[in-house]
Length: 389
View 1 (cartoon, rainbow, N blue to C red):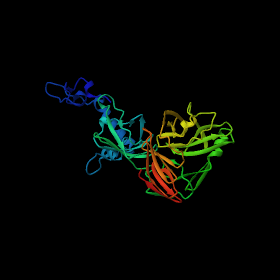
View 2: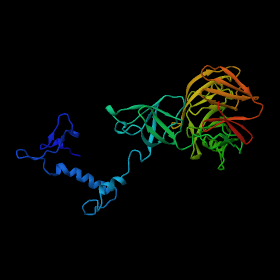
View 3: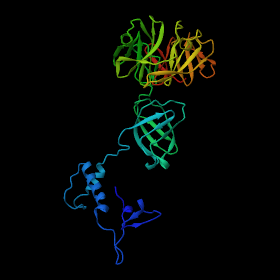
View 4: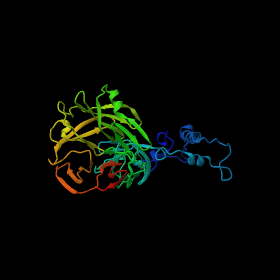
């Protein structure tokens, strides 16, 4: 759009107190005023006319008055807001969340809708920034009660701390759960109950998918066994063992297509030659394997893996030991950097930083620990109670 500052017959201001440095000049007896020419008024009129076009308002040909209409006002009332009336994408780079908006032009406490492209990890200090440059390249602290990739959010852009509220409820765990179809998968970041049964994935819809059979076809190995299933980062991850090759590996599925598995690259992760029977756990961000991912005879040797869902790969973060009295079991969960096990009715925790063990209590009921919607549950039969570990 052309501006008055580029034309010679205007009043200019060096401050400038006028937008873009100039305004219209009045005509006097000694000085020419700003002329009515295309270079001055054409862009303004054409923008107003285009506003009528994009909002599907046909000019009436009559003067706008209180007795007729105000068509520009009507157009503004119809106009779609391209910032908070559409779904923005909230992406993440390491610990920085990114919105494709210029924060510098938005008022404080601006509200918008967005869809998350990554998981929010509790305990991580996050910031958020927009796409502004220079003085508009603003960054604020960012907090949320939790969400996962694909969740719909309401975001409040508050300079004192940006807040995101999950309105999808995919991360909301009920107080009680009813696993009527059998054993829930040990880790499930979603709120929809999913079960593992001899290599099949079941849901309450009901639905049943024989993932073990799909993987056997995909890898051309009829001896493959699915030892465990995780629902993590909007993927189904299967922990597999090949009897024929005596090797462990991971395969993943998308939530929307359980007819095709994809190899999860795990270079240098799994040991070969001897079967140490490792167990697998997850906390929503990382995957943990006992026996150092089949590289150690010690059950208490834990290998921590960073799982990249979109890249279908895992990489080793660290390998460490926890208390040597640890007994590996599928009746276990990982939450807030602690591995909790329930064996023989004894609930124990193992600190995944220090390795220290703590006995938390004796529970005579024969039950199972599992995670649903990111929360821990203790289930007996067809009823499960959420536990605040």
